[in-house]
Length: 283
Image 1 (tube, one colour):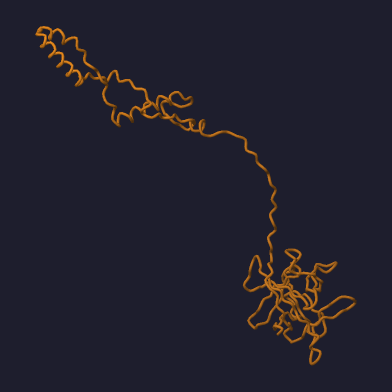
Image 2 (image 1 turned 90 degrees about the horizontal axis):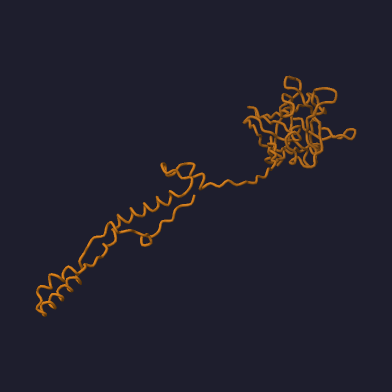
């Protein structure tokens, strides 16, 4: 909207014809006095009365209006100039349409579309790794055995020099997206090897089995790829620990009552296998 420029007061043409007042200046009085002396000197007393009407009084205009009158004149000039602008309602002076028409300008705006893809939330976040010696509640040790080209984890009693065969376990701890104070997500790997305990469905059946799988870097696995390697470690009141499969809830890492048997994944309701373990830090 274009606003009217208000001129300075000195630039405003003003008519004082209606405000003009007649004033006799001091010069008129002096002229009259000199003429009177001149007439007396000629001894024509009668000419004084006839000469006086010929004297025309000088007229001067009044002084400039004071400040209050100046503001009134400026306001009148602004209003008169605003009347000439199209689109301005004389009754309301300003309204919403006036502002839109004179202030806002319609122009095309270029919009660029960008495709975004929401990242999949991480279910488990790696924390740290510690090395432990893990034995079942009967003190059977875990040892790594090779059989037909495959690695297996067995539970047996080891004494004396044979204790060196006991496998050290890398326990990797994780934070869970849905934390449980009683269950801590962990991975269980063989120290010095890239082998980790994993749960997978047995071929031809729905029952899961426990096996060792080689993994280059377990920390790089996430979500579904990591889930088969995750176990929920729970510590009970007697300081024993159990390991429940995250991929197959209700199935636990267990050992047989007999010696030299493979460590297996057994359902919770099975009372024959042992699912409580003792964890000691490898010092």
